[in-house]
Length: 372
Image (cartoon, rainbow, N blue to C red; front, side):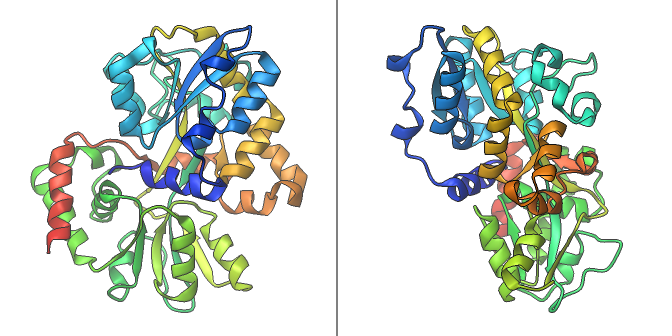
């Protein structure tokens, strides 16, 4: 399994798992007068509450199709395309794969009125994989997160300059990592000094060195699907250091511990991370309604506040971010501040989670790590 599955499993678990029958409540049989829009996404983006609010506001019905991962969605769009879907969500690192396969439609962000509310960096930084050199977007940025190194300061110290190598300095068996094999190989590559731009193209001896280095970290604990598992392990000392998928993890640990127990920092080599959001499927039958859905989800203040509280990730909308901070405890402003929500520039230091250039070789490399 690749990046995306673990993160979304956590989101679904923390917001309350949704049965398939609940997610598809607003089906074709409930089509409104203004037609429909077909949206394939992780469960948190086709939640019944989102569907209910959008239909009430616009008269447009949603057919929400839940998916487990980027790979799952890519496969389904490849098979059905615009005949079956209008919108497909993705992590930004997967956008180039959709575009190369001619499955999605680049668009001007200005076509979505809500884009005026975005942090400028999410509109303008063309190093982000969802922005093309001619100013088009392959995805509308919704939420984002940067990973980091988190440790129990009473049991372990990570010295500056903070490095992924610190994971290898910890006592054996006391490291916890979250995600899947590709994530762990990527961290090993970063720790060895492989440039971010070359991580997912690692092959041959370079990939083998990353796998060998990762093997030296064994035995390591794996939290497949929950930040809560990682937080509890570091708080209790079951693990002393780990890779966190949210910069807010130390805040969560300290809040539960009732003291300043944990610290989190960005590694000097760069952190894994993601920006996610909706893409327009090429030749979508309901393109106009798709734009209306994106604008509602990303522009309606109440809907944006619901997304933040249900998911607890950084928001690409500057207007939403500022509203959260202004609302204080009412919208969990301390949590938002702790995870870097007011520092979107952190995204420039991220290695966007993406598929490797050679998935079978990477799968074999990670299998070799596990085999010993």
